[in-house]
Structure formats: C-alpha cells, structure tokens
Image (cartoon, protein in one colour):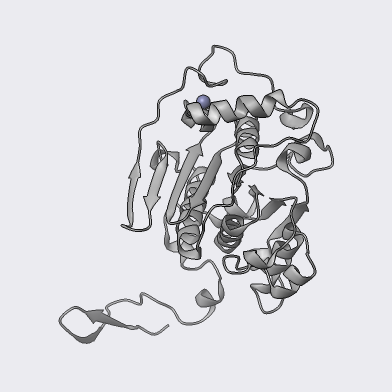
Amino acid sequence: MAAVAAHTPDGPPQDAPAPVVVVGSADSDPLARARLLPWYDPSVLAAASVVVVGVGALGNEVAKDLALAGVGTLVLVDPDVVEGSNLGRCCLFTAEDAAARRPKVAAASAGLRRMRPDGVPPQGLAVRTVQQRIESALDDPTAPLGAVSAAVGCLDNLDSRLTLSAWALHRRLPLADGAVSGLQGRVLVTPPGAAVCLECTLNATHRAALQRRYRCSGGEATLVERPQAAEVTTVAVVGAVVVRETLKQLLGQQRQALTGPWYYDGWTNEAAVLALQPSPQCAFHGQTAPPPAPSAGGGR
Ligand SMILES: [Zn+2]
C-alpha cells in the first residue's frame, strides 16, 4: 500500500502522511467514490425500485443517473416511440431506434445496457418496461408498479402529471416531478404525507383547462399541450435535481429535501425554492377527506 502525493495550494506535491487513495481493487468498484459520502448506502439503493414515468429527454437523463447511482430496479413507463427529434437530447436513444420507431421504453432499456462495454447495465440494474400511458398502466394488473419505492415524473402533459401525483399520494410514495420549458425548469418533490402537492400549484387557467377536459366524457380527449422548446443543458440540470431529490428520499435524507417548488432559469443560472401553500381547491389538501384512488389499481 503506497502513499500518494498530495497537492498543496502553494507548492509542489508533498508526501502525504497516510494514503488517501489506494490504487488497485478499490478503484474497480463503480460506486467507490459515492461510498465516500457518509449518507450514501449502495445496499439501500440496490434494493430500491423507482418508476420513471415519461422516457423522453428528461426521462433519459433521469434513468441514466438513477442507473449510475446504483438503484437496483427501474420501471420505465411511456407509450410513445422514438422520433428523430428526440435524438438531440436523449443519451439512451440511437438513430436506429428512430428509424425503426422503436418504443421509447425498449430503446431506453437497451441504452442503459450500452452504458457498460460488456452490455451489463450499470451496477446490475434490472429494467422493466411498460409501453402505456400512466393512466392505463395503473389500470393494468400486470404492470409492475406494485413494489416500487419511489416515483419520478418526466411528463409533458398535465393530465398524466396529476394522475401520477394522485397515485403517489395515495400510495405514500415519494414523488419528484420535473418539468422543462426552454431554459427554464421546475422540480416539485412530494414526500409521503406531503402537505402540498402538484394540484396545489394549479392556477385558474390550469383549472379551466381541466374543466374542459373532464367534460369530454367517454372519449380519448386529453389536455394536449403544445410541444415545449427544449435543449439538453437545461434538461440535464433538471434531471440531476430530480435524481438527487429521489436519492435523498430513498436514503433517509428527507430533512435535506426541497420544501417547495424549485425553479431554475438557465439564462441567469439562478434558482429559487418558492413557498407553496395548500390550495383550497386541491382535492387532497383543500378538503378534510382525500378523494378516492385514481383507479382501481391505484392501491397496488
Ligand atoms: Zn394539494
């Protein structure tokens, strides 16, 4: 075991009194550096299962980071196929995926395996895929959502965000919901028993749109939102915060978690955590009794 040289700020490297890095077996551990964090417990993460709802640009970033962090199981949920327009922001997709219009969940699963030269996903990750909207997946008893430890929202429409939020609240699952528009981002964390939620953030415009949505009974009507401008750097920043907050929830660091919506402006690189009050109009926090579960499968 050889001592290594330590740099000093005002001189050449000096012999360190004790080894700070051991060259050899320790560096063959993919999580060796993470283990140096006192709160980081790879065994907890290896036993965890996180559902990533939405596997577009943000979902790619989140799935990649969760895999590298050592989370044991990912459940990827998305109904869509890979398009060429995804390739500029999605590290897990290929041009072949777009040409074949491969399902995003399958392409992302393959991309996670490519992250290691031997084709084995990082840290022995298990990936399960659900090619459905979250609303359908919750009604599907075969969807592997029963044993997840945490949920992540990487969605692009309000309907699905609210469905995921309601399900996580009912299941008492920690949820980190991320959103990106151009160079602006937002992350909202709702731990089990959260005093506020995504629905508490809705303004009058959102609620008017939802009213129109729910009057469309019996059809496939959905709140269609225009495609948002997006570029990879803001997606990466927001994805990193989503994953960091999820790791805090999984590793018992809730006291360090975001306590309100986190907003990020990529033009100025400024970020702020805003105070969020329960909304009197929220189905969860504006009434004494919570609403029924979002679907028959919501209690799984
Ligand atoms: Zn609420």
